[in-house]
Image (cartoon, rainbow, N blue to C red; front, top):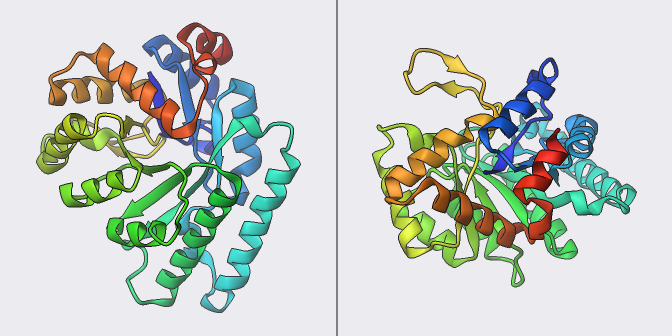
Length: 287
């Protein structure tokens, strides 16, 4: 099983990361993509990526703008893009580990449309897309209540790389628009919640109509309520097995079929070579 999006480098895993990785291997996880949050976690990101031979992304999350003074938005954005550019140059011999630009995007839950913060998010996202296009790298996109806005930004670029829309929870109409633009929709634990009826229907429909443009993720350690709704729980890559099982149930397919096509779609989106995530190779890398 391939986890298409996680943050295994976050400090919440510092005390037991090796055990977390071992549990992932024991549950059948063969590879994972670790998403960068910002400059402040980049050293930990690269250290964990190298240690466990995963893949990682390079970018700045829109939430980081929350702590920036409005009159400093553009200066801060320019600095962040320069930091990314410098790191990309510094990692010239290890670029094969950097598979995409991101996690970047737009979040209307954090910034109302029309505010200075919103326009700062748009500017930061636009520069990420430009960075990716110039280097021929895929994009990893965070979008909350902003799928149409994300589409509008992406549509401004004539030559667009592959795009992962992480943690998709939009409408069917938005799903269609995004996949027709070449995006891949990534689904996580929200699929496992029976109350998310529309999302579960969208996923099943997507597998029928656009079978090559979906993937599965944990977004670990994102704390969400467990399936019994009794407590908040730290998620970890080993738990992606639950997502695969639910995906199989919703689509009427076998878990093995979901595992296979998930990996094929991730490989296509991020242009991975198969030999880098074969099951045996991954077990050797994680251990």
